[in-house]
Image (tube, rainbow, N blue to C red; front, top):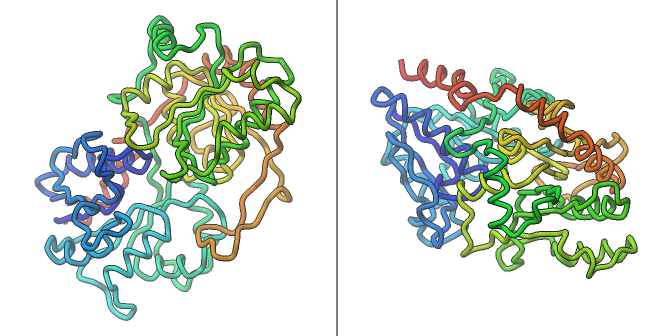
Length: 413
């Protein structure tokens, strides 16, 4: 059987690329019965060599082959590539908008089926996806997979003409060859290398700098914590792109300074409590460095107002760090209150997106005071949380991919 996987290129630095890499490793294990092709898009030309193509996978760099150059997705090459590869199954992994753009590029006929099956691994981050995107996916998909049970339930609530395709679930997992729980001595050495005080309690936000990730909420909540003075020597480490020319949404330093001033704190006195690692090109933060950053930090923080899964939180948890997250649903698949503090919201606390937003209708809002309270609770209960993490069961990529690989096996017979 010939299986074509369409996703972010593995030689990239996003969660998409990490998930694609591990799923392709699982597919590669089915060789020679299954011949796996990867149409990898948005590989950054200035940062090659970050992650290797998994063994047994034939890779295609869509961004490098685009003609003319567009956004790096390879929409103007996918039809030609499919005609060359002649796959039995095409699986597209991305959000509904990009998935439907690939449908358009493949020039799928509304009234007839293509000579291959179409499987989708759908990234949902908000409720209220544009109905046209839902209709497009349901019209063409032979199988649909979601990240979590809660997202599968959400998908089932959309109005569709034919419910013959019931969403299945492929969760995310941690690659133990990339991430480890380092001994305390090694962590202390890392702090010295990164020039972080040995007695600091470090909160870590590893999210990219997009509107959805709400870095402003993390910063405001942290400043409110500093004002309360309940966590001595609290520090916040943000690892993200801070260059607007490279797509950075929030001005992290200005928000921090403004929040300090608003809450009556000295900018000079607290300037060093915020530490920023810039990931904008040409900077490269590889998996080894990410593992080090996870291990030198005490508590993970994610204040996104929408999340597909939360891979950074899962990975950081694996290294022994309790988490603080917003109540957006996806985290419930792998975080409970023994290892995590959740920032609560209410059904009435929401804001609506502009009409042109296709990937959701609204997002929840979170009070700064609630963020500060969750940060404080995580610090106060850190020893209890760490003990609970030691007993936590983490799934492997092989485990979460087993049902999907069985589907691949059945399709190949």
